[in-house]
Image (cartoon, rainbow over all chains, first blue to last red; front, side, top):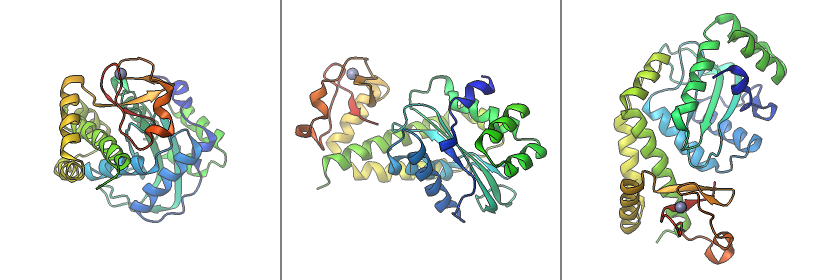
Length: 154
Length: 117
Ligand SMILES: [Zn+2]
């Protein structure tokens, strides 16, 4: 999978420059609301329940200050990727206990063959492994810049 | 007595969760997750959530769901652009009319439970 393919599933409507929520549960709710407002996904409750269950399985926050809430749901018809940031950071139960600043929400339909969304997740996780990439992502003003930074990093 | 719509949505939530559990139990998926740096210690919690959801669903409906899932892989399938994605047969447009509102609908062709995402 190329990054150009991935970008098709992102959009300016699915970019939250600064989250208001300050704790994990509220962040999941705010992310779900943003995805319902910015995409064709309609069912807030189903998405939120699926994301909460996924976090029960294990936090989706990595030690790099980035989290990847994700999963498949019947309420989703195509891969949908939302990017969100929190300048103050949120305790998202990461292994190292450090706050999470960057969020990539990935939602996929149940019939996602070959776990396309996991490939997408891996691709983004790889791109943001570099600290300078994460720093630039936090500074980007427009959605286009976010895409450009990710493209150059991949 | 819970409304049929609530029952239907509980089924959808259950299927999402069943798939999440299946993924978490699959060695291949676990390996992918671990490679990316994710830990998955909470499988027991997912099973607990699964039991809770099952308790909220009418026994008859749950049995039908489990039978369909065993037979067809997925018991609940989304209707996309008027088509049952389980068997790719057109779903009658009348299915979305108010007459059936709140009812759990099955595909006339493959019998799977239909969901409009
Ligand atoms: Zn069918």
